[in-house]
Amino acid sequence: MSDSGAAFSDEFDQALKERGQTWNTLDKVRDQNDKIIALGSKIAEEETPEPLTNLTETKTPPEEIHATLWALDAELKRIEQDEGTIQANEARIAQIKKEIQNRWVVFFVTIGILALIFLCMLGQSL
Image 1 (cartoon, helix red, strand yellow):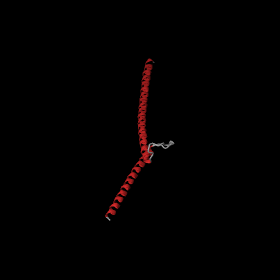
Image 2 (cartoon, helix red, strand yellow):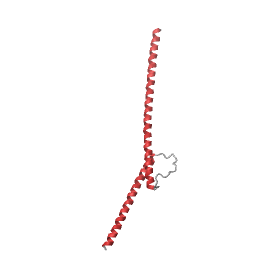
Image 3 (tube, one colour):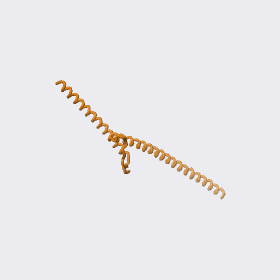
Image 4 (tube, one colour):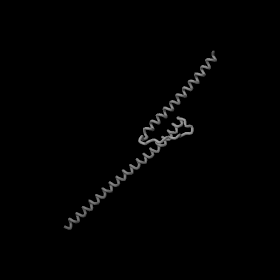
């Protein structure tokens, strides 16, 4: 009787271990799903997606999802770099506009001073 109890216990332990592995796998899949949803919200939906080719040799869904996440992360890093470049360019444009505005102010002040000098000279000659 103790042998059947040990066999039952071993089978039960094995079933519990498999159940735990299944839950762990489910948790990983849920985490990957959450990542995909988060990444998807950052990518424009306006473009028509190209048909995807297999990204891995095994062609299993978990491996494909993992490879896709890597590709999405790389694309998002490129987008962040491009956004940084855009912000730097916008800052440079604002700086150039400020310089142009300052040059116009200097130009008009110079014209005003020259006009005053001319009027003063014209008033002295009359």
